[in-house]
Figure 1 (cartoon, rainbow, N blue to C red):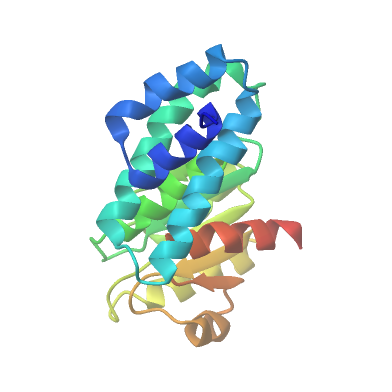
Figure 2: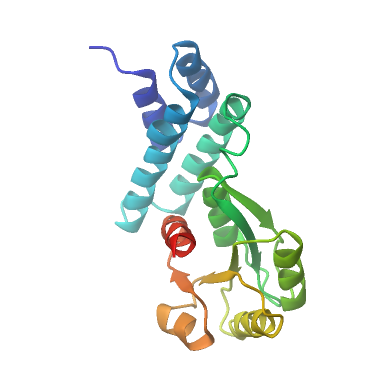
Length: 211
C-alpha cells in the first residue's frame, strides 16, 4: 500500500525536511486532499509529535526549530487554499521578551509554534517595556500576552507588566516562560499560566482560551 500524501507531509515535517515540504504539500493538494486535513493531520499532528519528543528529551531545540520552520514553509503553500480566518482563527497573541532582557531564541520558537497552530502572533521582539506590551495588547485586542525572561534580574519586569494590565483593567490572559521562570513564580506574580517550552506554550494557550 502506498503512503498517503498526508502521511508523507507528516513525516517530512517531523523530520524537518525543509526543502521537500512545499512540493509535497502541493502534491497532496493536487491529489485532492482537503487543505484543512493537510494542515491538521499532516503538519499540526507532526508538530505535536515533535513537541512530545522534545518534552521527553529525545530531540532538542535545533530539531524543533527546523520542524517548525518546515511547517511554516508548508503553510505558505496551503494559505491560499484555506478559508480566510482558518490560519489566524485561534486567537491573537502579543509576545515579547521583557525590558532589560536581550534573549529571544526561546521566545522566537514559541511565536513560530503559535503561528503554526493558527494564532495571529504580534511579536514585539526583545527588551520590551511593560507599557509597550500593554499598548500592543490593547491595539490588537489580544486574547493572550506571552512574556519571556531568561535572567533573574529581568524576571520582575513580568510582574510590572501584569500590574499595569490590572491597573488598565485589561481583560487578557498572561502566560510566562523562560529558563528562570517557574509555575510558583507565575502564581506569585499573578500570571494565568507558565510553560516550560514551546510545545507546552501551545497547549497552555489552547487551555487558557477555552476557560
